Length: 257
Ligand code: PEP
Image (cartoon, rainbow, N blue to C red):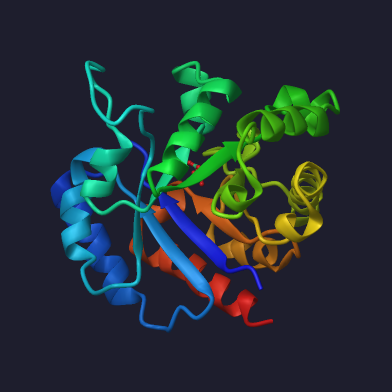
């Protein structure tokens, strides 16, 4: 059975002091056993070491929000997978729509980063999703198919089982608008089918596909009950310990079904 994986994308929020309060709050409030649910926090680079230290002995994993695709070199302002590993990261978000939009990241570049992450022992959480305009033009399937095929290029079937795809409709990110559970499930199934056609159905069944886009305590349960929604990538609601932990608790409840 696929695990449910809840990841919190802290984006460009939280100073080290604020990060300390948030992670301590999550640890205090998260008292139920995780079972088949995994929890990841992705603070900004400046808080990674501190959060790692505070996570010692906890089953919460650490992730970063981005990385470059070399281990070291003259790449001013960039952070390497080797550096992320050295501060305890085991996950990295790649190709978030904000990186695609503000930093011009393409499927090809995200694919190169994903391959580097995998060979560096990091699990990439690769984001895909359509804009509102694309949804209204009824080209969601086409857009998501191109993105999924593009970001998975030259990734082997054993590697693909070790990555996470996050379906994040751009119109639902930070807007308060959520895809309905049925809308999300439809695209998740499409993504699984693309993976099935590219690799095999057995492989596709193993890949975790998260939903992201205004996930909140109130809508998380219904979303997470959908058969192809294996977790959530949470932005706004992960910045408060209480709402993040409620989403995690809902994931635990739905994975028991
Ligand atoms: C995100 O940043 O990946 C995200 C889904 O944000 P939000 O939950 O705020 O929509």
